[in-house]
Every structure is written in C-alpha cells, then in structure tokens.
Image 1: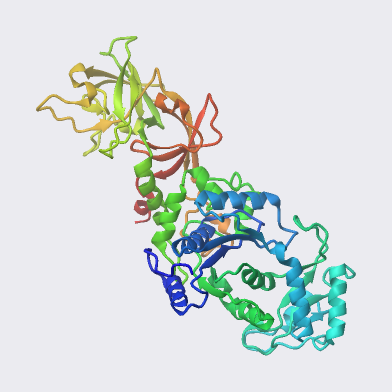
Image 2: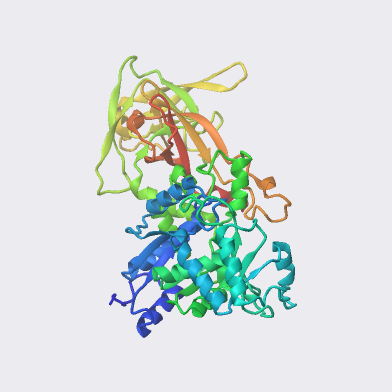
Length: 558
C-alpha cells in the first residue's frame, strides 16, 4: 500500500480530504490525479495552477499523475496544440512517466457503457433540436418538460443509437440523452446530452466515429478507467459533480471523487480563451507567445521560470472562494527567483556619450567585476573593458540637478561602477538644445571605484565602453491593460489596452553578453531582469524585460 503519511507541504482543504480518505482506506491509500486539457488552445497561468496542484499532490503522496487530452471535439482540435501542451507541462516540471492518455482511447468503452444505460432504461435517443432541448430544459425556477421521445422502447433506442454510430443521420438530427429527472432542481440533471452526431475527421481515430461524447459523459468515465482517485477541477464544474457521480453510480464502475477549487484570476489581464484568441487574431499582440500574454509560452518568452511559477502558485494557495490575485505577487515570485540565479551586467537603454578627456587616447584596460555581488559565496567574475569614450544612461545626468539628485551633473563627482570617479566638465548640445555628449575628467587614484580616504562620493552610476559595447534591441514589456479588471465598466475589454505595454529601444550592453543564448537571464543593473529573446541574431542581440526591479505600478496607482 502507498505510504499514507501526510506530506510535509502546506495544508489546504484538498489535502484534508485526501488525508481523510487515506485514513479510512477509501482508495487503499492510493492517490492518482490527472490534468485533462482540451487540445484546442494554448495553456495559460491558470492552467499552471491546476498542473502544479495535481502533479504536486501526486508527488507528495507518492501517487501517480496522468496527462489526458480531452479530445472529444475534433472540429477544434489540432496536433499543434497537443504538442504545445505537452511541451508546456514538461517545462513546468510535471512528468507523467508514460501515463499519457486521450479520451479517444476510451471511445469504444464509452459507447458500450452508453448502450448499457439504454438497456437499463437510463438513456434514450432524442430528436429534438439543440434549441428545443434548451427550451424544454426549463429554468432555475421552473421545471423542465419531458421530450416526446423520452419514452421510446429500449429496442428502438438501441437501433437508433447504432444507426447514429454508423453515420446514417445528418448532424443535429438526433442526440443521446441520459434519462434522469426533468424536474430536478439541478439543471445539469435534466436529461443531459451524452452524444451528438458529428461527421468530422478525428486527429487520432480518423473517420471511424460519426458520434462524439460530450465532456460530461467522457470525463468521469475516463477518470474511472484510469483509476483516478481525486478528480480535481475548478469551481465552474461544481454543479456538474452530481452528474459526474450519477453516471459512475448508474454504471456501477469504480468511483472517483470530484473536488472543486477556485480558478486563478489575475488583475491587469484576461484569461478567457475567446478573448485571448481575439487578441491574437486581431493582431493586438504578436502571437500566442507574445510576452504580454498570460500564456505559458508568453511567460516563458518573457523570462519567467518554472520555479517562479511554482512559487507563485504555492503563495496564492488553494481555496473554494473565487478571488482576484494581484499580478504583483507573480512579479515578486520571478524577482525573487532571478535575484538568486541571474548574473548582474551593465546595459545602457538610453545612451548618452561621455568623453573622458583626461584618459589617454587609444588606451584600454579591463576591470574584474563580480557577476553575483549579492551572494558572498559566489565568486564568478568577468572582465569589463574600459576606454576613453563611455556611455551612461541619459537620466543619470541632470544639467540643473534637483535637490537630492546624487548622480552626474556639471562639476560634481560621481563613481563609475567598478572603474573610476569622474567629474563632468562640459555639456555638448545639438542645434535643438538637446544634450548629445558630456565631457569629463577622471581620477586615476580611484581605480576600481575606490575613493581616497576622507573623500565622499555620493553617487554611483553604471556604464559601458563605447569601444567595446554591443548594440542590442531591448523590448520593454509592461502590463497589457491599464485597468485591474479590463472588463469592468466597458463594453469592449480592448478599450483598456495599455498603449505603452511594449516600447522598443536601441541599447548597448557590455561585451560579456556576446555569447548569450535565447533563454539566458540577466539583471541589467538598476533597470530590471531581462532575458535573451529567440529573435536574437549573431549581429543583433534582442532582450525582453521580464520585470522591473521595483513595482512601478504600485506608485502610479497610489
């Protein structure tokens, strides 16, 4: 028997249920979970919560985790989505260890069970149209009305159902419905549809089938076939649990326990598959991997790590109450993760040229700079070249400094990080009065950025060597929407798109990044965390901003 000891993880109501089931021996101490995506779209951060929850429970209880595709609607399913989902699940760190399944694996068994329900008088073929079925179903306050075909004989139902399978009838002509209770206070029990006619080629079964099971019919029975003990899903399926239980009880098959939890809702974004599809199809974003989207492919391209996403889903926990999670928590998780793993480098995003006139022309030198100065135990370092002409951030200079400004200004001294202390001696402007170049002198006695004893240098700025810096395209991504709830108070959520969600600048980075590869993450000192984008070319580095060093939105909203 599997070890039923409570695992050393944070407790929640689902773990409490599992612990009680294990104490009573309900499933002989076994814990089997699954993630059952429909292969008709890309996964997003909400799916990551479900994956991490299901996989984490199986791992913590020494159980098993299945990946099962709910491929019951061939009109919307594509191999592209199947491949992408498998890649994303693996990227998150969830392994199914050969337990990859499809609902289509069970089509024959589901069909045989449907015939069993017909023989037991618990299912019938109905000729009503979809609109008529909807009208007959009733409302929350009014009972439904029985279909005139509800009392067909078992023999007639079996004959019609077999002919449905054989493809004799056009789409929409007939459906198979469970015969439960049209007066039930629970609408899901008012004779739900189990099969519909669909003459569509299936990616896995081809043209074998002319009828396809609904999600409600396929889901619970697939769980039973796979021996799933705890079928964990989001709250919108809570009302379906009675139907889930009814089917398994009516068939007399192995029972699974459906448990619902609150889905993940994030502010400043949308999670609806329909709305995400609109953003992509109408070119508001560049594709499903656009770093502004909450899709896992988008988050990965933006520089989010599986570890950060797992930390985030652990932070928000599991509950039964729907709520909206502040995206700042997700940003905190990636900052915390990258703070430990991302080397520090110098990059200039808005370059301003500085000529150090006291530094000999043609002379160069290098400074050894630690890549992980925040971690005393890490000694990795790189050589950063220095020359007469350097570039600094434009906002690190003020010609007329305001009170409290501690960076470079005329006739003031500032420290070039790990290099020399300099004093600005001149300001060069173009015809429009825009500053285009600074002149400065340096103090050779301050090599390495160390000021002589008794001399106070208040400011430190970063820089790159003009002789050695590499050009880089830097994509500054921000939140996709300007409102916490993009759909609140607007007829169209697109009205709340953030026009500044992407700004592209031509920057300069230190030469140590010449060999940076797509996916490599760095902290650009004083700017934020950045990742190398797949668009990078040998002659043109491209970086995406993952997250700023601080939450600038909190200041804007206060």
